[in-house]
Length: 177
Image (cartoon, rainbow, N blue to C red):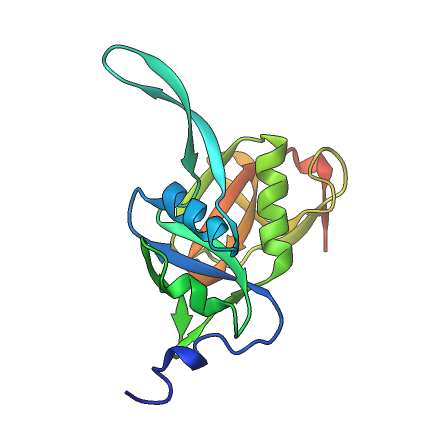
C-alpha cells in the first residue's frame, strides 16, 4: 500500500473540520445516527416533503443531498468514521479528504432552518455574480446569483461534492459583494 493511500494520511488537519462522506443509498439517517452514537459530530441536512402513496399522503423528512453525510473530524478522530456501518468513503482529491468551509455548512443550516423554497442541483455551474443577502430571514448569507426560469435565485455552491442549493429570493434583498 502506498503512503498516499494509507488511511493515516486521509485527513491531515489537527483541527476539527467538516468533510463530506459518501454513504450507502437510502441509509443516510441510520449512518448519521450511528456516527452520533460513536461520538462523531455529524450533520445530515433534511428537508420536509409531502410523500404520496396509493393509500395516503404523509409529511416525511428526506435527505437534502442523497447519499451524503457531513462529519466534523480531525486527523485523529476520523478513524472512527471508517468503521461505521453504511459509510463508504470520504470525498477525496489526490488521496486526501476535501475539507468543506464552515460557512458553507452554516449557510446550509440557515437555509433549511428558515424553510425557504429551494432546489438541489447536481453538476457544475458557470461562474456568476457573487451576492450577499442584506435583509430578510437569510441576512448575511453569501452565494452566487443565478437566473433560472425568469426567477432570481441565489446559489449556495458546494464544490467539494459537486452540488448546489438554489434558493428563490427577491432581488431587492441582495447586494453585490
